Image 1 (tube, rainbow, N blue to C red):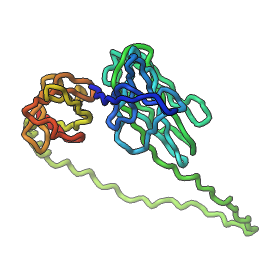
Image 2: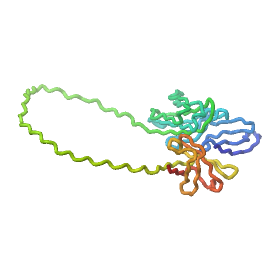
Image 3: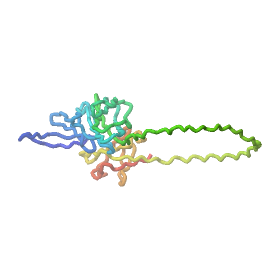
Image 4: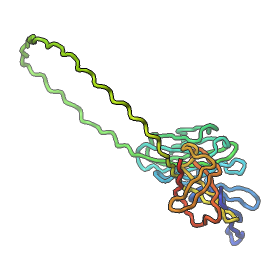
Length: 292
């Protein structure tokens, strides 16, 4: 699922070069974990001081937690430029395989929200909570197990409250108010009730048309080439929540390539693209269509 980029280096002249492989756990590669030849793991976003950015309105970011592998904590910072309402979503691919939770921390270090992962829940949303200008932090942590997850944030500004000028009541006048006597309404003869016309027969209900085939469209978020020429892909926005199960066949938009899903989670699936389908020509973001 994670691709590795290997590099070699030396120690000398006061400079330190790492020798090892980078395990790419996100689409951008920003959250890279360095695996050295001594099998120690260096997770760059494992502390608040080295947090990676999370930007409003950008597509959801792929990341992972792996307790046994050393990736036990991830930090993201969020810059808020003005007063408004912020929302954060997190989607865990394999909630049954992960123990831990997530927290939202404000600029003063106070925890605004802290929640533990539920093995029966994969999607969490903390919506429209008020924020002031400053830097906020989103933390995920694992106490056991591992899983890939995605996180995204959004923001909407709120206008400053409008202060109205104080109202001035008019001064009372000394003039006397003439008493007005109520007048009795004139009596009018009531009309006789006319008989109701004969009821018209109700139209027969039309027979429901059979439901047409539903189409689900996902997109490729990760492509991992393999040594035999095949490639493993992750398809987002197409999972069990939308009726896509393992064995479902999807077609890559704009091509004749059809791929079969090997594993499906609540919001994503995995598939293997055969070598004869030329997986090197595929790009991240390509749509995958499913006919239900």
